[in-house]
Image (tube, rainbow, N blue to C red; front, side, top):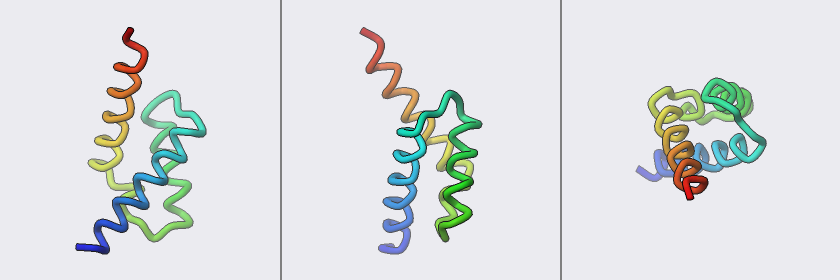
Length: 68
């Protein structure tokens, strides 16, 4: 289980890095994650369900942050 936990932590860090650099849409986010996957052994960086969930969580946070 710790290997999966390590992969999840690594994937979250990668997602934060990609989002911090700026993404206008889901495609740009996936492209950024794919670039990081090329130098990483973390399969979650290209795992569609994980990418979709991470993007959805990001857009939900942005919606609530800018809602008021």
